[in-house]
Length: 139
Ligand code: RTP
Ligand code: MG
View 1 (cartoon, rainbow, N blue to C red):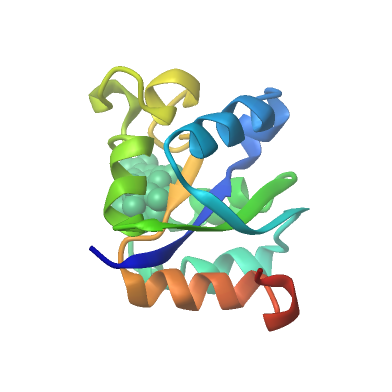
View 2: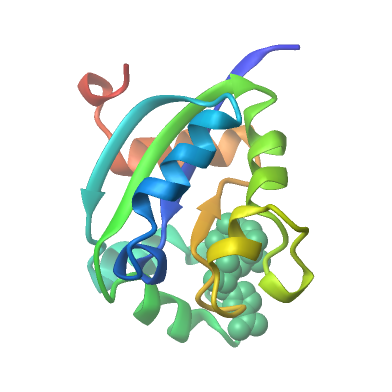
């Protein structure tokens, strides 16, 4: 059991639909400490860079357009087993497959507009956190 960190974004759909407060409450209730937090918006270039790993996928252009379409909440979170436990809390990528009580089951509207992002590894969590936050912004 090691205490470690993950990175999340509340996506533009969930921000636009007024779910920031409820989602942050679920994150806190699940035992995550907020290390960094901001309301921000990705430019198209930011979204292309952030999701570069998916650039050959057919959904890449839609994903970049969606993720740069409005404000997001970016956060670094800390907890034992943060990456894996957070992906459990958010649920499957497609909300139709997400378990009851997960953030995506409650707040996602579709496969492409699925309310929240969770880093998929410790390494990517560190890269994604550094993309959004300076050292001074990580508490
Ligand atoms: P995320 O990175 O946002 O936490 O999501 P994930 O790991 O569950 O899913 P990933 O495979 O990394 O896909 C990134 C995001 O791309 C959108 N997507 N659209 N239309 C499609 O077939 C499709 N597939 C994926 C989703 O917004 C997904 O979260
Ligand atoms: Mg992913």
